[in-house]
Amino acid sequence: MEKPNLSFWNLWNLSFGFFGVQIAYSLQNANISRIFATLGADPHTLSFFWILPPLMGMLVQPIVGTLSDKTWTRFGRRIPYLFIGAAVAVAVMFLLPNAGSLGLSVGAALWFGACALMFLDTSINMAMQPFKMLVGDMVNEKQKAKAYSIQSFLCNAGGLVGFVFPFLFATLGIANTAAAGVVPDSVVYSFYIGAIILILCVIYTTVKVKEWSPEEYAKYNAKREERGERREECEKESNDSANWLVLLKKAPAAFWQVGLVQFFCWAAFLFMWSYTTGAISDTVWGTTDVTSAAYQDAGSWTGIVFGVQTLGAVLWAMVLPQFPNMKMAYSVSLVLGCVGFVMVPFVHDQYLLFVPFLLIGCAWAAMLAMPFALVTNALQGYGHMGVYLGLFNCTICIPQIIAALLGGVILTLVGSHQYNMMVVAGVSLLIGAGCVFAIKDTK
Image 1 (cartoon, rainbow, N blue to C red):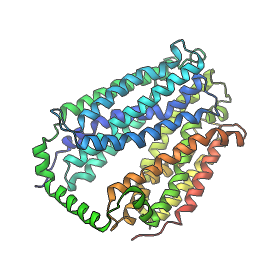
Image 2 (spheres, rainbow, N blue to C red):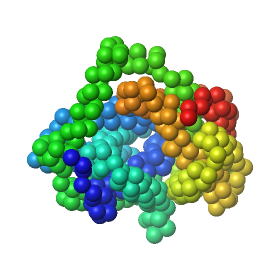
Image 3 (cartoon, one colour):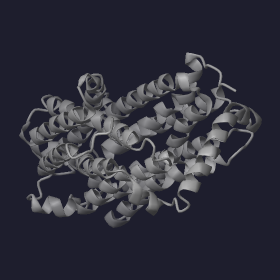
Image 4 (cartoon, rainbow, N blue to C red):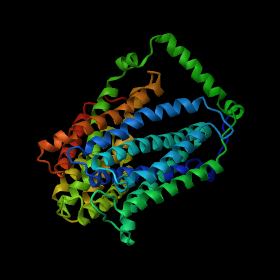
């Protein structure tokens, strides 16, 4: 039976909690390096803390997807995971920014912060995945584009709110400095307010959305599941040893070629997230002293420029379809991002930083759109699409983990100036742009 059409507000309600989840995610991305530097982390070890986000994403999202497929409760199928993830995230968001206020030694505070970050990443990923699956469960094919557009809007809106919170609170007079080793109140309150918004948004979704019962789900998905079972039977007949290693060996060349581009792109952005605060603190505010008011001002401004990057991505996403082919759009976007990164060390005005970060947003837009489009085109006729896309997700996580492990070594090689890591990021994007032309075209 065809799934019923949903009203705009029903589609909105399905994804509204994503707004709160994205606020939490953006607060993490913009402030983790600032928090750990304030706690006393050396710049050469700063990137190590960034191993946790991609690692948790790679582990948690497939597990939540698998478990929730088999879960049926009076509260729904996906919503229990959504609510538990959000509740844990809220608790951790009240703990993490206070790691320096508990009377711990520097080492203990860093370990406490690292453990809190691990739980925050785990819970955010646990809360994030069900929103994607709710759309898949309850929205018909005709409305999916609209549903995901609403989700994308809420994602970008939540991201902008999370990015600007510390700067906004500092502007309102909340202290943006604190004693050595203590995170400023502007950041602490940002996490508090973000946590409150997160749980309110999730409660709204859980109240407004009534998931289908097993009988209703079976009614609307019976034909699709029958087709899936028949497809799986055919696939098993054609390849009895269809495990991950076998599938990877048989993957089309474009799968690996796009994965190579992904490596250089995601490594570049890991360096951006890790070192932007230290870079602009040095180049714009003229200090590397993490206890100074200038450094904390730079930390607040990092959220603003990340917000500008998000706006740049939204605007550039409207330009991408105008290119004659995807490879050209992909490569040009990465080159623009390269130019943006390389500009950062040479910009000494906080408002002029908007220019390079708008360009970096162009690369970000292409990274979110082009790789999966190119890979899904190449996978037509291969079968096992879901497994292949799950494996392809590793090309997002693994580069970040490797870049995080090597960040301190690379920082030493470039003279221990964090702004030089922006150039490293730019060079990485440029290599990625060159690798785009090695991707085999699939019509």
